[in-house]
Length: 604
Image 1 (cartoon, one colour):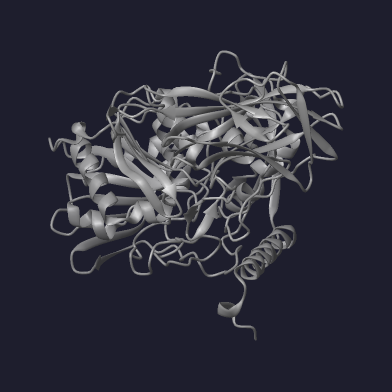
Image 2 (cartoon, rainbow, N blue to C red):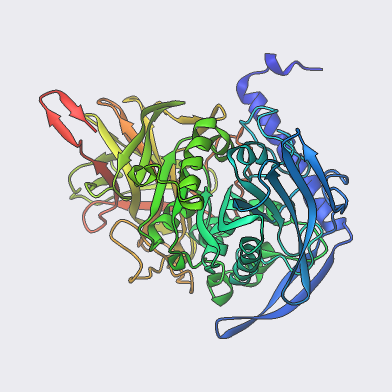
């Protein structure tokens, strides 16, 4: 057998990618052959009625069939100081019931601040393993860091109970052994969660103050529940949470990419019906009332919020826009380069979160309000940061100088001045990409939202365009950042040209907001203007390094990346980029001037 350590890195990456694709193929085949139950139920969203497709997915479905424990109401003592009430049954509306696992410090069983992990995966889904049943992994977290009490992506009772907290892991309706329908990322799901939060807050073991914690899927549900305004919910900590399922996950830029969503939604199991958004995307590919219900009403949230956003993760957009949409004045955002699971479980971040919860769940005046509203890492190269936890007042940064770098097809350069002569350059939309570069004379920081203002034509009536903002040496060698040792491709954006229509009320000069409500086909060969949103990042370019804009007809990502990035593209034939003259294609970049300079002394 070939020794993997002796393989060329590119060959090893290709081999690992083939293994992942084989696993996904087996999973897809299993989905098709398992004895699912399917049903369509008519539901009302706004003033419209839709037939919504659901699956009933038994607990036995998965790569293993023994991953979910039996229903077993009981009480036990863990490690001599934590009381564990297992499978506590709670009756809720519509003749449903849900099950909770309650962890409390043995030396104080009542009048406790409560942290809830509200999970669509199952509260005992993974038992704290670094490699978990089903599809879940806590990559980057050493084995033994997380106890078997923790729900996947949730707070660990082993830590929090010893800080004087009650931790409750909740199986959402329809999940695990809870009855009803799992209404993940919907307004109904928010009302279900609010009902459960208010039950928890009224019990003797609670001091009446309940918070929500968790990352990724367990952050998404926090936006959902907090928008419903449960009276006992005092604060939330959504670390890496999408809040618009269509725009930020299933159909970014109007380009269907349901592979990851399918993987996740088909891992929700229990006695209830599980919605199938991937199926619904095929039925309703355009924005409508059904999808609007999955754009969570973050504006309703008025309680304190501590959110985080990782630059390399697909939750980035939702975490930042969620923060920006919040109406509460008590909101904090930490932007970082790490992946969600190691960031959530690092001891220094747990201590930071403890300070937040102590302030609002225990009313301890500990100076939390002096925490900078924004803390951000400015990335440099590979695993190295230029600055860490730099304090700022808001995001986007108020001192941002949006700067245009004009594309020139003649020499594939970026330029600080407009190009007068019209030129074109073509690329094969299915296999080629093209780059434009600008070399900085001085150190330059780019932090915030980008936009590519691009004139383009297609040989067909549509085009899928994918954009990366990258850093290279002066000679064009890519200088990536890395996550888990894998090169991150850079700040990214994408758009289906026929869905380019902007919502003028919600768009700004720097941040396009698309309606996605109607198609506007291209005329083959005719230049059309696209305003392509590029998700935020924060990096420093040193003098002599180059800013690169890469444009392609497909997503470009290192083959070693462990998450599916497939999209359902319509691209065929050549795309033509137009620059100069009447076709003022440019990158709008968020240049951040120093806070203070004196001679060669610079403070950023």
